[in-house]
Structure formats: structure tokens, C-alpha cells
Image (cartoon, rainbow, N blue to C red; front, side, top):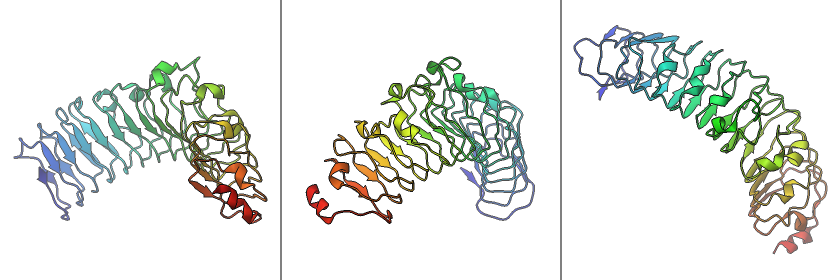
Length: 342
């Protein structure tokens, strides 16, 4: 592999005389300009952590392009990179994605996080081979109308400026088109509702909604239909997470509902037989339902709440291995209660 090791360079680097070069690593230099458009056989190009503002490529054989950590605003290709599989343009100054990106049909990973993107072309979401799309830490405001065409496994949209979530419902977006998505991260936006529908999140394993403005966390479809389909919803650091979420929604494996404003939770959650881990720390809980008959609960985190009294025997099921009651300043526990746990 051709490599330019960490040397300081402000010169014009030319690709002349290296027409057979297929792999080039010029990362971690101070390159301000790099001319590689004559490298017709180039398959892998790594130019991470430089000072490039533009990049001109031939593109016809390119399979991997890593250009993260530059000052790039545009990347041009003489030929559409039809064989390009991995593209990393994170930590740059892009306001728009490269215009050829929707024609690069072999792409399966796009990292475009930490840019200045305010718009993403809808066509990118219909790419059949795209598995992982990272658009976090941008300036996106409006959800594109893509959900009915989404084939990817992982979609990262955290730290943008979304205020209204897309309506994922069977009427407009059919689940058979959206069933491949396994991870959707919408954390740290300004969402006021959550996009949950049983026939469009069949394979969703992780829904991350930390740091939003969710006041009504009820799903858009009956909770019973969601049971055993959507494990581990993450809802940390929301504002006004109401107890309705816990009474209306199912938590088949892990429930993380920390740093909210919960004052109580319904007994419904204690009857979720497949629930294994329940994190409720940093809320305003005064009491909790009986978990002693829960079959599979292994972790129960009640730290940093406002508990006054607890009967340990009523909240500790037989398989529980981790119990956190710390920082409940007014909590009074009868020391003899621990004897019932033997």
C-alpha cells in the first residue's frame, strides 16, 4: 500500500507517474491539496485528517474512500463510483452530500456525521445495498419522506434539529418496506412525539430517543402488538416523560427510562414476563409496583429517586442479580427485610 507518513506538507501532491497505483494512504498529513484524478486504477483512498477543501477523483474503480477530518466542501468524480462500498466524509464542512452519491449503488456504509448538512436527497434512502447511514451531528430539520423505501439496518440521526418525528404507520408506510431497520437513533433533537408503529418496526431492536422534548410517549399503535418485537427502547434525558409510556408500552428485554420526570409507574410493567433489565434512576419515583413475581428480571436500578419506604420482599424476584437503591435520601428500609432475601 502506498503511504505518506505523518510529514508536514503544503505542496501540491501529484498522481503523475503512478498510473498503476490501486491503494493510497495519505492520512495524517497537513495536505491542503491532493491531485489524484489521474489514478485510473485507484480502489482505496485514505486521506483522513488533513486540511483538504476539495478532492477530485477519477472514481471508476474506487471501492473505499476515507476522507474524514478535513475541511472538505465538495468531492468530484469524473466517473460515477459504481463500485464504491464505503464512504467516510465525517468531520468536514459539507452543506450538501456529493451529487453523485445517489448513483453510487454499491454503497453499504456512509458516514457523513459532523458536517453542516441541512438537506439529504430522498433517493439515498432507497439504495438497496445501503446498510449503515450516519447523519448525526448535522443541521437537519425536516424528515425526508423515506420510510417506505428504507432498506438499511442502522440509521443515526442524533444531534440534529428535528422537531416533528415522521409518522410511521401502516396506512402511509407499509411495514414490509421498513422492516429491515434494526437501529434508529433520534437522540438529542427536539422531538415531541415518538414514531412507533407495530407493522413498521418489526425488526427494530434499538430505538434511541435520549434528550428530546417528549411529553407524550404513547406509541401510535396498541402496545400489545409491539410486545416481543422492540427490545431496549432508550429514552434517557427526555423532558416530561410521562407515566403513560410505562402503562401503554411493552418492554420485552431492556427498559432504560432514566433522567425523566416519572413519579409512578403502572403495575403493567411488572407483568412483562420477558423484561430482564429495568433502569429507572434519576426520576421522581415515590413508589413502584411489586416485581417479586416477575420471571426474568435480573437488573433493577432505582437510584436517585424519592422513595420513602420499600418492602424488599415485594420488589426482589428470585432471579434478580443487581439492585441499586442508592441516593434515595428519604428511603427507610427495615434492616430485617434483608433476611427475607436469603
